[in-house]
Image (cartoon, rainbow, N blue to C red; front, side, top):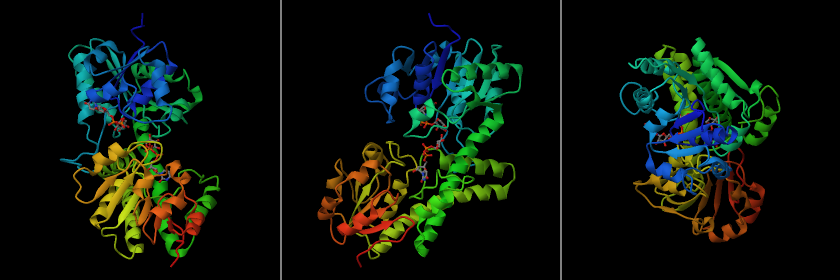
Length: 459
Ligand code: UDX
Ligand code: UDX
């Protein structure tokens, strides 16, 4: 018999909810963990051999517990009734309408989930914010929940997720820290202890930080904003490097050796993508505007603007160097995912770059090891010539240029001698991630345009 207290529900079986619950189920076998989602297709895939998301190590992790103490269901209401601790990990996209459109978080799914919890609950619950929410959202949610007329008590915790896609399983298993924010009431404290106890099954206690709810909510937004800011900073310098013949990789390396700066997240590229960075920064910007801090808002908004500039700059560099026209020229895109080791394309620079190139009437040949399904969906309805290939060597046949967008390792292992023979001449490579061997490509005959460093051309 399962201990009724050791029951966990997660509403939202997405990139965050699915892997996080799989890890908790694997590490806490005495807990019954249920993941519920309104999307029946998604749940069917979580229950199949073809999981809805690709993450290294995830299949094994799910297989370890599924059917034992890990369950996927569409019955959210039953899940609520039967679980003591309820994580909410539904999506919180940027609002597209009304006040704050384009910046503020759209909390309708969150509020809907909170109201459903309130309606279905027949006993006290602990509700955990897993989705990234604006600062002070927990307070609003708590108010909604406490308005129940059944005399039930709800405790709201903030427990933001810091996992990165592609390394989700490793990040969950060995997190830098786990952050838990709670209300400063005895009840809030008790709930926090319950959650600490769960994570303490595998995370060293000193890495489990407890704060007040607002610090926790704020820390999540600021972590993402600071990470994105580093990328925008180095990308801004990559533009300057291309003008001055300095080499961005040498610069990154040199500054990163200063232990105060540190070497991580200094890779210049085509721009950051992913579901979080842009959304969370815009959230922060909106908060600053709401609290009448326009200078602070403008400061952070510039991180997003710089990212858009970098994407645009990459596409414009392609056009400019291909004799100012890509009209009817085939350009092979290597990669569509927003980063390597994921099939996710949300906010991928590939989308914006593709649209810019299509606007120039280029014909696109797209190849990605994991993101083809999403790429097709992202570009569905786009006017212009776009073809999708399962084989990179087919994508480059007759192409004038290769634009490398995603840092998939397999791109470094291709036979570029063969690729060169398949392409139109002069053949161009624009390495948006600086992962290829540029000197070798040049010696094969390519005109090579690395990012943030001098081009190697035969003319
Ligand atoms: C989500 C949030 O977007 C992010 O802000 C937060 O940090 C973590 O949770 P992610 O897991 O990547 O991130 O989102 P997504 O993959 O879109 O998954 C959300 C899931 O919630 C979807 O499967 C959706 O069907 C489900 N959902 C949404 C519900 O089950 N009920 C709803 O009312 C709304
Ligand atoms: C990010 C945060 O890292 C994670 O903590 C949070 O929970 C969710 O948002 P994620 O978006 O999955 O995770 O990936 P991340 O590895 O942070 O990369 C984001 C983007 O930045 C990618 O497009 C990546 O290619 C780009 N990037 C990253 C760079 O361009 N240069 C770098 O040096 C690092």
